[in-house]
Length: 222
Image 1 (cartoon, rainbow, N blue to C red):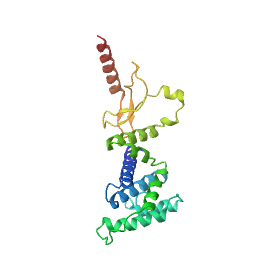
Image 2: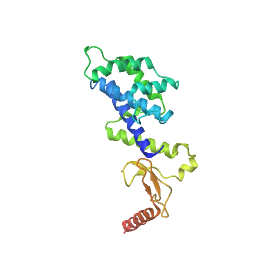
Image 3: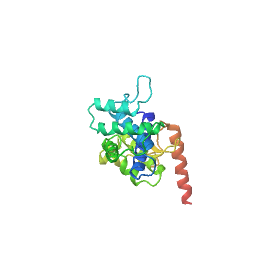
Image 4: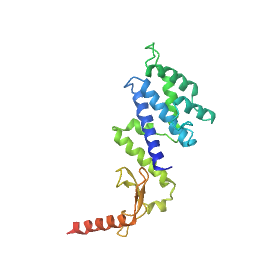
């Protein structure tokens, strides 16, 4: 996954999670959050399992109805009847065509939406329900995505001892920069790459950072 798609998937998870939580707490009118959550959740699943099929022939993102067709055709287990029924309810509300104030998404529609979170491309609702700020949730999702992209979870315990943790990127400031290893002073100012923006720290820059950090450490002892 390139850094552009990593960011898209993080933002899809974010929008899905935040809007499902808003629906669960009954904080806002349901039609907008439901559509945003459904479209982003489905897009994340399709992009994960069937990369490229989340877009139509014209290159534009498919609507929720189109994403449902892709997943149903692939045999993905979802409550398609409930999700399509919810779309029939929310679309007139979103586009000013509704004429019945009592026709709203109901519990089974929300349950079908929540069930999408069981797919590995999402798994975000536990984080979203616990987060007190959007920025905190976003940081968690970026860290998870970068860790997955780097294969950190697949490392043996021995290898993990010598692999630095993710750090703040020099360019985009997300906690998504992975140092290649330890520098010659024992710090983590080595070459490395950011999985969110694609920034790569070269050898010259790494040496300068390592030298400056060591100088600051030595001077701090005086």
